[in-house]
Amino acid sequence: MTEPSAFPDSSETSGQTTHFGFQTVAEELKQKKVADVFSSVAKKYDIMNDVMSFGLHRLWKAFTIRLAGVREGDRVLDVAGGTADLSLAFARQVGTRGQVWLTDINHAMLSHGRDRLIDKGFSLPLAQCNAEKLPFPESTFDCVTVAFGLRNMTHKGAALAEMRRVLRPGGRLLVLEFSQIWKPLSPIYDLYSFKLLPWLGEKVAGDPDSYRYLAESIRVHPDQEELKTMMEAVGLSRVDYFNLSAGIVAVHRGHKL
Image (cartoon, rainbow, N blue to C red; front, side, top):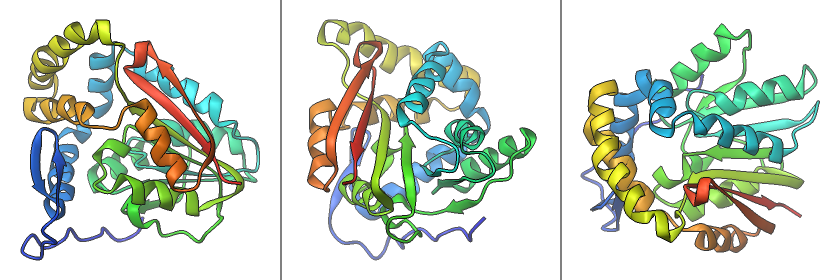
């Protein structure tokens, strides 16, 4: 595992602000605040995923994995891969001739992902890194994925551009992320998000605030069409997306020509 990267000194600010849920914070502070969230929930992350999605996250990830079209011998980068659900599936697909890198900016999440991979009999290369500055040469990977990580990044466009940079020509980027639900279901979804989800966070993970942030971060994340436009703006081609569970999540796919 590479050495942990230091967080920016909060005294050295650029003056720019960004969203942290519904809060407006200095850009330099968001990374640390997000890190605090995931360090807090890392040990209960997988359990909470099952509880809060009623197990649907497994189907969403399975669809993303199939859509990625990873084959034996491919090189795959799992950005913000956390507890390694996608990395584990891809490692089985690429075989001994391929390679899968698991990366995450958060040490606690990456360590948990490493332990899960070892428990399953896989030893993959790991890197703790910021998705906005990936430590890989241009045109390295056949496929890059990011699942439920993009909305936590400060400069989403910069991160998408980096993911495109490290793709080989003909490679594809898959973004699985919470998105904008079908409008008629919004009142029920809001009730679940802002009432039930923090309660579950308290009961299961002992941390209601982190799951309150989760609900808020979804609301300020780009919707399906806006994210498609962002991916096209960094040079990805043939960008399409697939709404799952009435738009609770969406999978975006783009290609590097």
